[in-house]
Length: 239
Image (cartoon, rainbow, N blue to C red):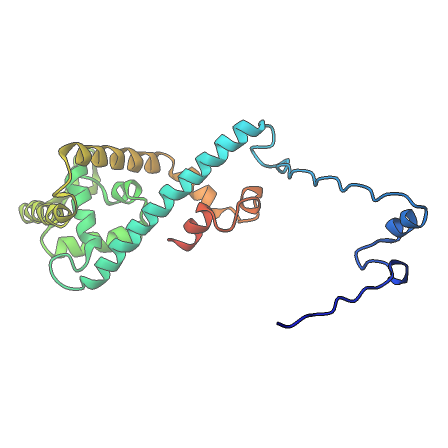
């Protein structure tokens, strides 16, 4: 067994502790005890933070709302990324280019419309919609007719072939979803459909507010006082 020799050193021979400050050295010299460290003050919300005027319980509840909303956003983003990866693998076939087809589906649901109205309803660039309309007309899926309310303008109407194409697309779209929800209960499927429609309607209704938030910088107080490992980080990373 090995023994270590303990060396002792007279207390008086030691220099000041490396953590001692001049004030503590002065107190030691006078024989006064150390002062107790006071606890750091709790971080208060920034005055610009919407939570600044709330009491701690309400701030906690609001933080939980933000956290849950971040988790929902993260789940939606992940779903979009999954579908995007699937779309990247479908480069041929009837759904190879969904942009004009999506416009055709919207036109079938909205009814006869002007191209400008379609662009507004879809929040799309009018020039992009115009190019897609031209491709649909060329393919015989859409036809232009005189606008009964304005003879100088034209409206877009799906042809018989276009209506058939929309029905075929919707049938195949259902076939791609069925493997996912086929073993769900009817109640779960109803809940999913109801909540998806509610969420989509909310996004469309608050589109401008969402864009405004997305255009803000990340220098807001809410970003600074959130933990880097919390749900907001998941949203930032898209996980």
